Image (cartoon, rainbow, N blue to C red; front, side, top):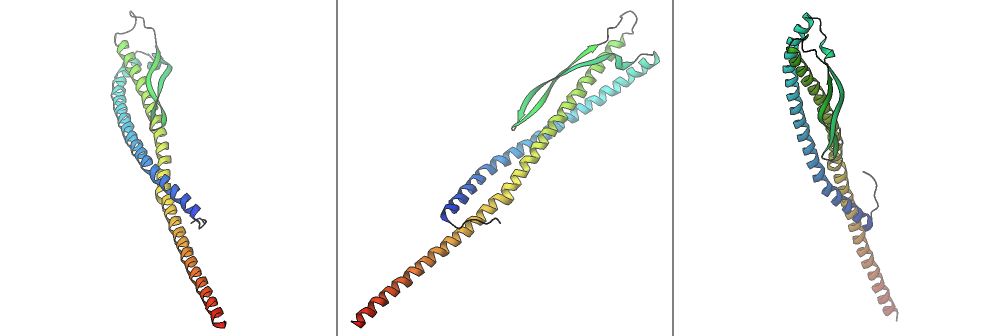
Length: 206
């Protein structure tokens, strides 16, 4: 435990610090709960995106067989131009929010390409969007997790270090002040007794 001054001024400083820590702790605990809930919600959304990715991937596998048979390259059908995001705030954490993926699709010759090309392009476009959405969600979870770790450290610091430390400082200072007050009273009584004795001695000598 850090050494503190055993004075009334220090007692007030420690008492004020204790009140401050006890006031902030519930706020930090609430923030921790909010962050935990948000991480859980983001994880659910990621799982949903992964499930949709799996479904689209299965559909794309069927298109892939048709394309490979006819010598076409699926990767040339859709090109990503830009991933559009917005910004939101979760318990004080700025996070990116997925909006859309801007893409450029290959221009098809309607007379020379089979009709399922359009369906394949639509599937690939959905997969591109899902991949971008998943990446943004994983960024969200990483940012919120980082904030949760910081908040958890502060909660532990307040709960396990700062508040117990202040309480111990207050206890030690109060004991010291009490001892000093008792010693002061004792000294006063001794001085008073000596004065009386001196006065009595003077009377006796007279």
